[in-house]
Length: 457
Image (cartoon, rainbow, N blue to C red; front, side, top):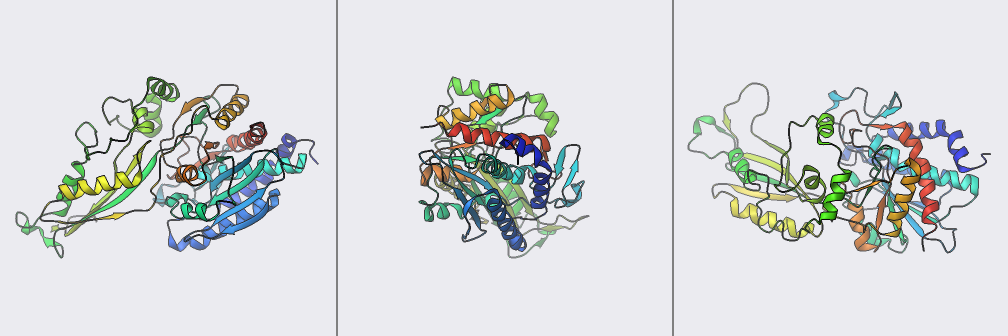
């Protein structure tokens, strides 16, 4: 038996890697109805892994959609209770032809694991489970009370998580939550997140006729694609400001200190361009690119379609066109309020010759920020400093993690983020990967964090 938790982790790395690869082989794509059984299979796998780690009261929590998994170890009398969050669902794999390796046949190449869900977030999900196992096997107990809430719907916006939290408020009661969904920078540039932005998503549908028409009707029949493009263009001006009335009303102004924090955490723009291939930067005037990406709201067109898109040409005027848009929100914006402002704008700018309808898409989420001086956040800073030898920079997440705002609103607790994903690991894209040294380092980080959180009062 290993003498201490660090020895235990070192001795069992080959098993942990095998488990990681096994979880990656489950195609738990939550957005695909055909993969519902695979999402449930992933839930069962995760529940079994929690039991193996020594968690108690492990159970599947049913929802109106994909299931979640719960487990606990609550034998640390008088110590804080920590809720650990993660998700086992993954994004679709399209376009498949851009993958070097099949997305659900994980490949280990040069200290990287390539597979869908590798960095987002099956590798990160295993870190706290492994850490708890190491502590229970070597010390016989955990330094804090731990509860796990691992869901299967994050990649579709956690539509059933709010009701689940309401239903199980007593079961999930805690002092602080730790989200494993995220990143902490790199060993050379460690970071702590203050929180993610919120989200609103809509689909706009424009119809101008009962059927597609011969393009000889041009000049007589209106074109829904032109109408849709003009409608979308009306939402932002030529410099990148969002022109939807009232969109910025609730946005908190950035202080000089906040702008300095964002600047200190931002990588060089040339590095970002090299990593992403973007040709240049565009957005709301008066803010730096990384201020716009982390602390300002956005409105983006995620997809647009209509008419003939096959090879060659088909001379038609289509009868309908569609677009999906999302807005990233910042404190103190609220999804319902922004949604109503968007709907009002669409009604005002819709042309009289078109029938314009809007579908509200799932995944609305509140923005979230933890106070930088929160004791748990300061504990995380101490852990990352000890782990890397450097004081982490303070930053904000570009994306959205719906659970954080929900937990603040429903359970009344704050959330810190400890994940080992890095920005270049192609999450949501072909050839997604996770670094094995991050996988090992993250296990140690969680053991250290649980010990550090035990000192909170």
